[in-house]
Picture 1 (spheres, one colour):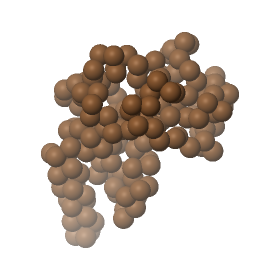
Picture 2 (picture 1 turned 90 degrees about the horizontal axis):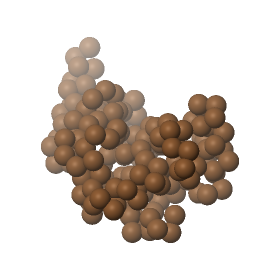
Picture 3 (picture 1 turned 30 degrees about the vertical axis):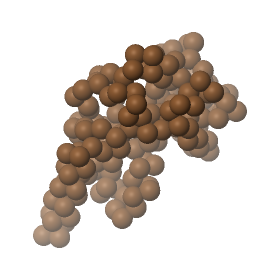
Picture 4 (picture 1 turned 60 degrees about the vertical axis):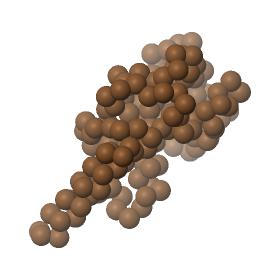
Length: 163
């Protein structure tokens, strides 16, 4: 009991320290949204975002890579929801990775209080174009787990026009 309480406090403190200096957050998007945000020079503060929080750390203790993967996968799943709402968007899950201050909302979901300058984007995670059929199926069925066999590819922010 004492060890569990101590571990929870350490995890909470660790997540809070990360938040104070900035934490890698994953923001679900579409390629259309990325172009809008880049053209505006910023990502608005009212976006949904995910990060490695105390709950994620507890779910994947001592597995930092898995923690980051879990947070990015939650954002990718939310990207499917955004794609369902935008019939014009290319059917590719899209996630923005950026370091920013964030506040835990629930489990792995976080909020940001200020817009994020586009220049702070660390990377873009995007499905390969060959996944578009499977993404369309996931949208139609509401089952993002159909995309479990498709890995998001890493791109630098300045590669957006090539996507």
